Image (cartoon, rainbow, N blue to C red; front, side, top):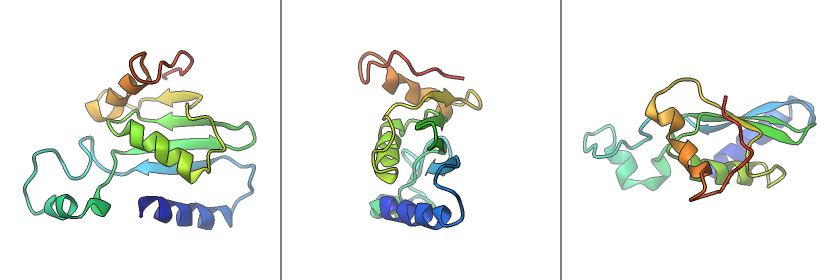
Length: 131
């Protein structure tokens, strides 16, 4: 469902822009812990525990430049694995799975903990700079 919604959003946004202009892809909108929050049994999180389609990834954006075939990631969240896959689905695998760079806006755990996915034990990345 999330993929379908984002695909519709991209289709609508592409009607108003040139295919060669840079654009933004929203990969997450939730606070550092995602939604639902771990261990939360309050009414605010119950809907997402009961219905996985209500789950939301931690805030993250992709800046995409179709002309250069590059993209940059804003925030390396705990949901990075799923967000990289979502990016590939939304962009129909037109871009490398690795971003040209990663921008970290500040030092809260929800903004940098995904960096571990780029390490030797997971992706073995050697060329993805953080900024």
